[in-house]
Image (cartoon, rainbow, N blue to C red; front, side):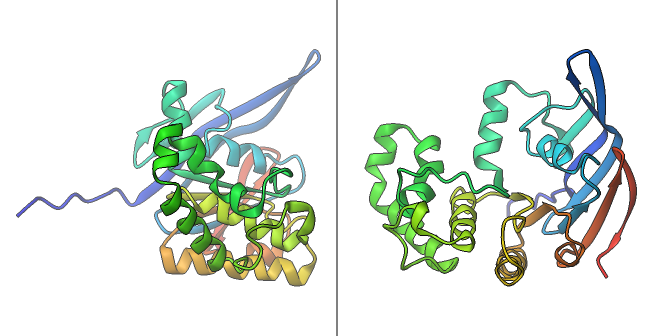
Length: 242
């Protein structure tokens, strides 16, 4: 009987990370020694005032940027110092990203936008060989997010909520382990925002998808299991969502 491999409880972590940016001659600290650990299947909200470092921390966790000091670890293994090709592969296979601005390609249909991550992941020959199965997978994903009737529409023909649903479907096409969401309801009205949060909490509960979400909205933040608060680049507090 094969040996059972026990994975560490911590899924992804940032350890004493610091990050600063330069604006002309000015050195602007953004993160000042932040520690955060997220367990597998956990839903964590990161909140704080504008400029507190929320989005920067999310970008470091997803390898969209690198820390000046500190480490980012996945299952206990450091990943921020990997070669560029390895980091690219992790971004494509391990992480899914949702942003406030949907970043859908305007010239592509909804279905084509959702297929884009698989086009990037596979060679041209591999993609075309499996295009039928990939298309079915994308249609199924769009059905799950409530867009099964919008496959051939362009982004300009969608509402804000529909565009965000398409962005979520695209993020999930690669079957990511960690979903990183930066103000996913920021451009939506309250009712549509609640629908998007219902979708995210359902994905977290049914698929045990690890979600780390940045938001300025306290009501939205409370949809998570735990809230992490940043203030002036430092971890101010954390605790269970009320």
